[in-house]
Image (cartoon, rainbow, N blue to C red):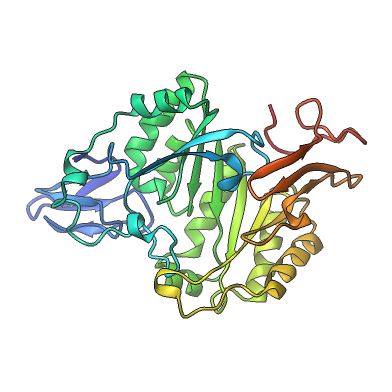
Length: 344
């Protein structure tokens, strides 16, 4: 549904030019022009969004799929998405819904007429037995207005809220989201501005700023790095691991995920197993307590072990919990160490 957006300002009233302030792209738009995301548009000197209530996906997922391994493990989360994204990742797996062609939003009934009220999303989450609502699949920043309203109502009903994001958001909207979002699964794709620009049309510094600000606000976060050959090298992998340890904390979980060629990156090879092994070893060398590997056959890298005594705390098979050994809201049954995360 089309509605007036938040986070923008007029830069030329006479020529009806506006600037979107939602993300670091800060698109400066002439009358009739769309932003990079494809779903925010200048109409007669007002910024409108076509994402409010425009659901393109809704599903019940295990929380481990986000991936979040230390946030109420084993629970179900009601996950939604609307179209659009402020990145242009070459290997996007959800490109059909994230990459909206220019000028499509104001021509297709889906964007103009669809309106699923926030209250309905919350009610469906409750009806399906979910403990949380997750904003994922595309980039939730782009449907900020809808996400914020849903999250606010969800919290009134005792539900947790989760944002799965590329972390490319400006500070003011982030501060508002920190009031209503409980956990964040952030992508830290590269540690090179050049790689961010070439692969995703993004930038590194705003991503690091967002992640650090979220951590400092006391929110639960987990970091995911998709190991993309030719764009992510060993130095970047090492830099990411040490940045997490030094700028955040050694107990922040780091998920390294195997890349498979898709969309506009079909000329790239899948991530070699040697690259995954290297990332896991570097994470442990850096002193990170919880390093996980995803998109690969079952390995011990899916499991959670106590950093103090080595006890197996959570055994996983894909998104399924095979064994849950934590006691008393997250304590190791052998040594009693409190595991970092949200467990009750």
